[in-house]
Length: 122
Length: 127
Length: 359
Image (cartoon, each protein chain N blue to C red):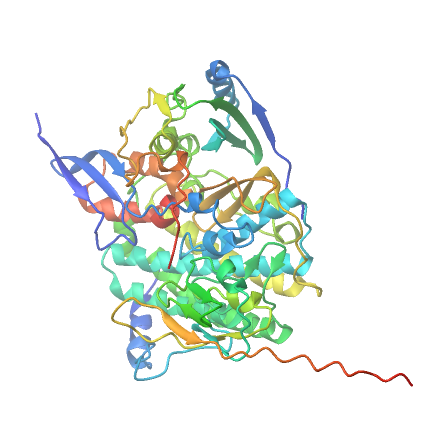
């Protein structure tokens, strides 16, 4: 059994809207929006799928950049964008349902963007 | 069009034996490989600490100088990881669940392993 | 002008298996809008990946959820094996497929019981769970755990199933098939159930595709998405047909899951016939360096694991996107316009597994 290869295209944040609209017109569905912290920057991945062909777009932002929301084109994207905002602290502009930080309530704000090295003991 | 299907099922379950077991008066249904709780053979443990490093919930503490092996039963998730990776195979998985407790605490077992003495090198007199 | 009132649904509700909160905006007895709120069971699994070695993280990945636990572990192992270019032996692939299909049987039987409970049919609930006990017995006899299997590892599986055990499982499937047939006849033909589920919570085909519905929620509206057709594990060597209905209401979702029970049993029988002899694992050396998205078909839909490694023993990022997270926007669409008494039936018909959603 071999798993299929996948393509990840890195684009500029200004071209995000154009590329997402192109995917929507070709009939792709949104699979997920993902965020990874690499060093000091965040890599945001948008994944699309149609008939099991999997394509990704990637943008790289810093903590202060405002990312435009794609919930105008994909109504269900607010779930991933609110989660990204609550866990990583990324500002997203223009979400259709904006929970303003109360989607996932945690003891520490933006827990995934800091590394906590408290010792764990039984 | 189903005709009294549910009535047939209900009558059958009313007249059959109950499907439940009166645990703990009757013993629970277990198989040979069921995972219940971890036990140790204290005479074989060499205090290497491999099980401490591999435990995903950090339930084990080994103290080499004091010769103790401690397990927090409420943290242990019976994943079988320590049993698989122990190099001298002194850990075993028992099939019954551990007994209920009323307070959090660790269980301490004293290790009785004695390193075997190496046989004295005999001076082979040259033949 | 009718007044609008807001009623909270959850997190504690007798019909929900796990806590989720929905604020229902009502006019008289009709729901006009829904505001969801999650976060009651967030445990931060994705942060734990930086503190456990990649071979030990399997134990944590499979404890994300209690109902679909084996498939989480298997998907994680598949992702790491693809990054490290490890070829798993064929017998391990077939064993993983057999355990995944037993997981699917157990999950759908559990859902059928909860669905009957949501409209008050306790007798049917208990009968469905009685059949589920047989499936859990098979899981315990072959892996050691009823709910959390712990038999997947990077490079293969940890336990083997002997030939006699496989024959025993084959015969047990015949007995189970007769009981499941009686059970699904009641679900699909009974008049009272039909009154509660027909034309309730309708989701059209375009809405299902564009809002991101996956799994039986999408297949009941006519969208053909079944990840098992991509051929991961041993599915490429077995015949399978996806079950598609076109009603889009709760009755169709119930029908899709009932038919999938028979599909699963058929796949298990094919796998038992075709399983080859051989080793069950390979030795793993080295550390993962790279990234990959693996996808698998859970009982609730499409599961995506994203894994990124940078050459050390600890992974950089592991992201789990579960099907219930992406089924929440279609749920909001389904609830608009329904009566208050239908809300529990509709919420349960998407099969919410909130502990997966929040990890």
